[in-house]
Image (cartoon, rainbow, N blue to C red; front, side):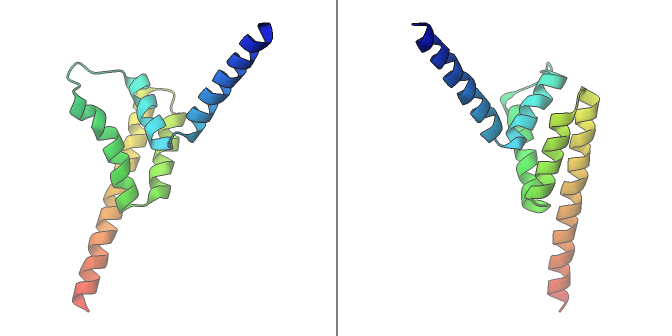
Length: 111
């Protein structure tokens, strides 16, 4: 019986570790951001979707690498203001990516 309990604990711990590592960094970053900054009184279901959509927008406009860098920064943050700074940096990456796409399109249309 003791062996069965030990096996169950090891399997559960291994499953949790695999889930935590295989879960995409932006999803983990959103959860970490929520843990650091807590739920605000005005939070709604729409607000919960804003974080993953933000990372999707960075990936689509600036690149997946930039989205992962922003997520890594948030995951390493130890305070809410630090995580907010990471998100602001991600916003700059998003803006830079969108501006580059705009300029590429403008350049194509001019030729």
